[in-house]
Each structure stands twice: as structure tokens, then as C-alpha cells.
Length: 427
Image (cartoon, rainbow, N blue to C red; front, side):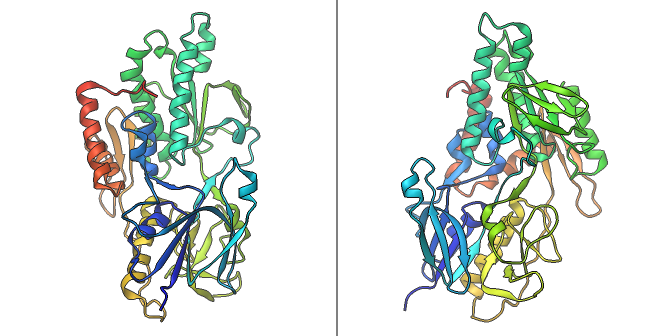
């Protein structure tokens, strides 16, 4: 008897976890994703700023220890009646191959395609900004930073031009934006002042956000603490900023005019990928468009129906539970993936799932630079700040990677960095 075929769409937190832990003795598993690796997104800022090598911030889907099939492709649509997914090879540099469409049959389908950066249709952002979604983005950040430093170091570069080149504008005052700010600021005050003593003083990092304050997910006491700590280190914080357009060298902000930059990092929210927009399933109607599931992660069929597709599940940033909305975080994605793994590996009997998914809330932690951090309170307990919060964040970042080899290499790299400094200038 042939094994039931599980098709997993996406190789992010949820999809990769399922591919790693689903029983290959019970199921035939196929992962379909345009990316052959799964990025540990909380580690990207650290990798971009040289805390460890880039390869430690991602994991390949293909592995001699992981018996699942991988197909580098985009899923364009799903035929729920015939139980098939319509795919296109994901090779942007080879149009002929990319146009050779194919279909895959499934017995079970897990939809975890993730999201894409939301530019809010701001003119020029897609063409000129950098994002922080995968390791190639982190590599682009590091490369551009050193290119800008070298340009500013040229003997014929005037002071005003140096200031413009070395203005790093970060759009998005959430945890991702603040953490990349913190890592860049640490880098500037340690390695860069020695590597580029003649221009390091001109490096300016600024955070721009449309909200009235940064780190809005935290309570007032904590986000005010973070704001004050960043300002003390001369990091610019421009809240209530509405960016109207962007060109190659500047942003244009309502009521503030033209703001030159050397690097523009856009880390302010997500939007649905085309697959989610095109699927005829029940979805959220406000904010980020996400597929809706029941409490057992089964996809709801339509807007006016409570019926589900018994063999189709959705999780990760692209999905939400109807009536019990959860944030788009790695923690939520992994907990849902663990729930599905448990279902597939030990609980599936051909009947309706008996136990609904329950989210176990974890504390929100953010690094704000200079070995300082903030941790949100949980229940009646208040949050806290300082070095202990930084240590909690740093140790937590190690645990995100599932490979003991990578964990050991990250810790070893930290020790070497403390003893001998980062080799950040090596590209």
C-alpha cells in the first residue's frame, strides 16, 4: 500500500518544521518552495552585522538526514476537488524553465507560503529599499554598508556627501527594525570606529515609523525605556512619519520634505503572497489578508460557510484561526507546526481532530543595543530591562536554530569575537 502523500507549500518556520519532523515511514513528503533554504529570521540582523557566518542563519531543506522530496517552485493555485496543486519552477534567470508548469497530486495539503514585504504601494520602495526576510537580504545589507563606508572614505568625498552616504534609514519601529538598529549601532561603536576612523563618526542610524512610538507591542513603560536608551546613543527616532515616495538617494516625507540616505531598510509589515490572494477559501477581510482555519487548522471553504477541507491545513504568517487571531511570529508558526506533526504522526485516525490547537503565550523579547534589552511582562508579572534581558534575548536566539552543530558554531563564534573581535570586513 502506497504512503499518503503530504505536500507542504513553503519552507519557512512552519513548513520546514513539518518537513523535518513528519514521519517519513508513514508519509511520502514533498516540500514546494521557491527557496531551497529556511531562514532563521531572528538571526538575520546578527548575521548581517558579523556576529556569525551567514550560513548559520539558515538551514537547507535538502538533507541526507531528511527523507523528503524538495521542488524549487512556486505554487500558483490549488484544485481542491482533484486534490492537486499547480506549480511553476522558480528560476527567475531562466524564463524557459519557469514556464514549464506542472501539477502535483496530494492526499494532504499543508499551506504555509508565508508573506512578502508590504511597501504600502509607496513609489520607489520596491526598486530602492532593502528588506530583511532571508539570508540573501542580510548579505545585501552587509555588502552595501561596506560599499558606503568605502565611498565615504574616498579622499575627494566632501563632508556633506559623507553624511548622506552614511545615513542608514530604517523604516519600521517594530522588533525587527529596532534589533537591526541595535546591531548596526553596536557595530559602529566597536569595529567600524577602528576600521574606518576617518568616517565612522558620520554614520547615522535613524528609525522612521508612521506610529506615534516605536515597539508598540510592549507596554508604555518598556517602549519609553527603549526610546530613551536609543536616543542616548544618538539614534534618530522619527515617529509619525508618512513616507510619500522614495528615489535612489532620498525619501520624501510628509511635512519633512527630502531626507537623503545611503541605505534604506524597509522592515514595516507584510502583505499576502499571490497564492493566498488567488485561493477560493475563507480569508480575513481587514489588515493583512490571511487564510482562515478552524481551531484544528483546517482551511475554511468559503466566506459564508463553516465547512472545512478535511485534508487541507494552513499555518504560518499566511493563516489565522477564525475567532482567535494570533500574531505573525515564528513562535506561533512553530507551535502550530508541532500541533500538526503530533496529529499526523500519532493522532490521525481518519476522523475529525478531537483536540483543538492551543497557543502557549511566550514572553516578547527585544534587543535595543549596548547589551541592553526589554522583556514584556506575562500575566501579572511586570516586564524588565537591562543586561539580563539582553542575555535572555541572546540565549533565545541560539535556540531558534534546530541544529546542535549550528548552535555550537554560533556560541564558538561569539567566544572568538569576544577574544579577538569580529572579522566583519571579510566579505
